[in-house]
Image (cartoon, rainbow, N blue to C red; front, side, top):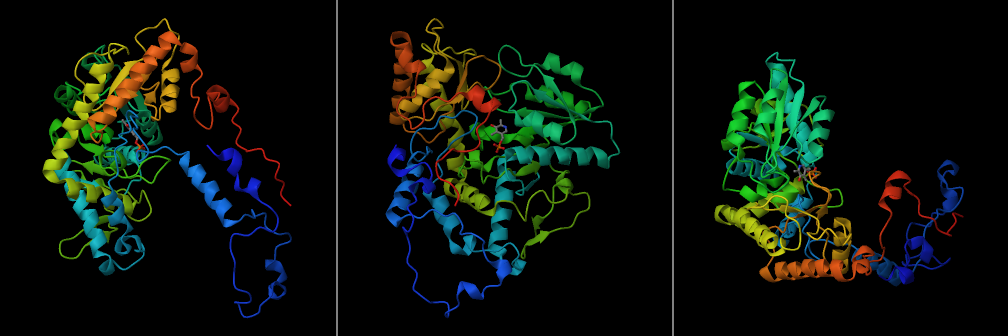
Length: 489
Ligand SMILES: *Cc1c(COP(=O)(O)O)cnc(C)c1O
């Protein structure tokens, strides 16, 4: 808000000779710059901002206030599970016993950290029914790639080289086809039926001895439980393919139903979604990959193993090589393990039902004003197809922008691609009834505004530092340099 006073760039606040520090004179034994070898000396002074401390503090504090996170307010960003990261996670991750570790330390000095990896692997196995997990991948998308590489390695180990196709539902997250393509396989799309689930009849003709895997998300990106999974997994297994479970939506069924029991062979989990670790702005995250019993040998190295004494084994055999530096994002894994131990078995079983209750409550209280293309009970999230009244000219984009004026993060918009005006809401289990009711009131008020004073909604946001940007121009002719009067000297 105060950008006008405290600058967009710290350089714009610079005044020659101002200082935000004081160093004692001559504390370095009287060396002067003249004694540095000529080759190491600057030709010109570095262009650094010259500001007093208070200006620096205000500048960065005001910038940080323009950020919006779960700690600022309600963040119903569908598909992203923006759940609260409990303070205890941060307290544990900040302990110097963990944060002070170096990845090159001898193993006997990091037994506690290795025990965290092992404990997390075992918890994830228990929650999913899988036989083994690697914590190494950095994100969900990275996990998908690693999982598909495991599947490829499995087929190759059997001399089965003609399996090059990966079947992906049309409702899938964009990372699914992207990961399949990057892993060197061919993407084949399978359609959904009108009720939003994979069309089994459309799947059948795609199956054959060239299918490496089918990827599925459950509940899917419409927030619907895929009812035909037993039939689908049987069909895919019959033709020799493996089933990949995109675990981004595991939150809805955490501790209640398990992907391995449904017939999935390989999966990933987004620790930064389901297991509450910080999320957004590109990382750090973690996307552990699990495999059913019998496929463990293909998981990448290094692997944490052992009983009394734990080791990071580099033993290859049929295993994939390294997919990340060391064991992945350790402090993210530590936060997730803290969350699991804090909630315990009973607490974890409450997560899915509460997230599901919250989503259904919002859906039911808004469906008279917003178009619900697929009626019925949803899981942890659901999709509206814009406002019900199509005569106002107000789009999903307008509604999302207007929500910012009221202090809410926008829901996910224009995804999934199955509807023209998708507006995807995921409240998570964390929110109180008061917060959810307040959000519902604002959504209803925006629908009224759309009818009564559409210009207000169409020109929103009105209260944010930046108004509406031209997103087409931004995509086609991005301006990647900030223009300023400040010149390098
Ligand atoms: C978030 C998400 C992904 C990608 O996960 P990242 O951790 O963001 O890489 C994949 N699939 C689905 C369904 C998701 O919601």
